[in-house]
Image 1: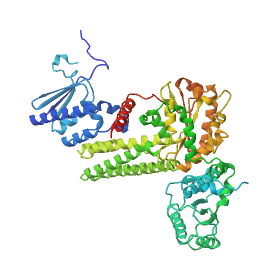
Image 2: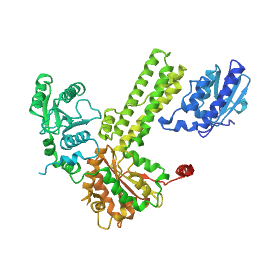
Image 3: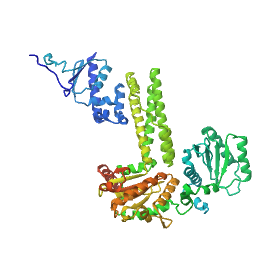
Image 4: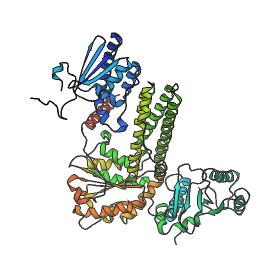
Length: 135
Length: 485
């Protein structure tokens, strides 16, 4: 008997984002940058930017300074909310893996690519670490 | 017809030349403003105001375009203009030719009739130097001719018994505010949300400091971006330059609006808003290109685009605020409605103060006309609400400030149901008096009973946490200053 396996729209993304960097220190730097950006984004309540009025979709003065010091010009104000979203980030050597239930991960993709990483994005529903659990 | 008393005019608050210009402008606007496109701008070069006729009238027929220059000239009757004044008049015509080239009729309006020699000189200008202009001289007699019909209220508000001066306003305010003196301490008063909204509707320059701040932010961001985007590809750079040009233009507009508010020139504010319509803000692709080019200017450009959105929001808010003729402030009992009423009618610096009336003085079967009789101008009770509005409007125009007439506590009237029709009538009347803002305060639960449906409402939530903190800080400062030797 074939058992049909699927999931409805209420299912989460179960998104996995993997960045493989050329050197371990590149991955280390990105990890630290994300820590700094997340801390500032949290102070700035950046999670609300994407829902804010267009006139409030802006960087704070402190965030501008931080971006300048990190030499990062690739983020949009609305990206910052992703850095304070529910996600799990793990670095193993030259590899950083981000897992999240949310769909918007452009901030991580931009930061990874900016540091020279090759990026892989998929849903763990389709590509679970245990292939037997694939939907 | 009674002759206008120019001695009263000379004693009016403010500079006589400015009052003369305001009076002439009001008269033309009232008589002819609806017959064409009437324009006036602060620092209008050449003519103070002009009218492009769209309908025929005793001024002429379309396409005639009439410009007025008003010169009070502190001269005795029969005294010659002199070389400097003549040069000034010629400059006015030259500036008109340059800045308002469509003007066909140029009218010089002076207090006294020019001497024969000056008249000959003036009309020779038309033949010799300005053949495209039809020249005309107007004098005080023409003013008196226009102080009838729609201009009649100006006879008493500029020359007669309805001249309301800041001193008269202050005296009436002192009497009206006395019952509240023991209840409030002005030293620890904090402007809260609802009061801020009323002050913005009064169009005071200080209530619109945000325009100045926004203009500074735009210019600062433009300078920063220009310095960081020099190395971009030409096609992206061209788009950035367009963005910067737009932002600079908006900063100029904000500065002009702020300056016009400072002069109380609300017509100019509305003209500027109308002649600079909002354009859509579509810079997402440019911002993406800047980020893609890893330009140092990309983050600042995102903020500049947000600033442009903020300008659109500010101009909408300004447009709405100065168009409002009346506003109701709603609050629960004990939330500070009366304090707000007392504070917004208090003279402050150049602001001459306002008229404070009490809703409890409205007795059953009475209307606004009876209520305003408590207000006295030159010792006589205001005859009617209309007359009070005329006097207040002229005082506001002279002061360059919108003046509030505040009725505190509508719910305290003997029969609060009386207000609804009275306020609807007042709102309609105020359409012709841009320098008056009617403010009424009442308890929330009386809103439906007292207010016409279309009357804008503002919720007053009393003096809450932030205000309490500020009050504590002010008290601490007061105590320290008293303790200091």
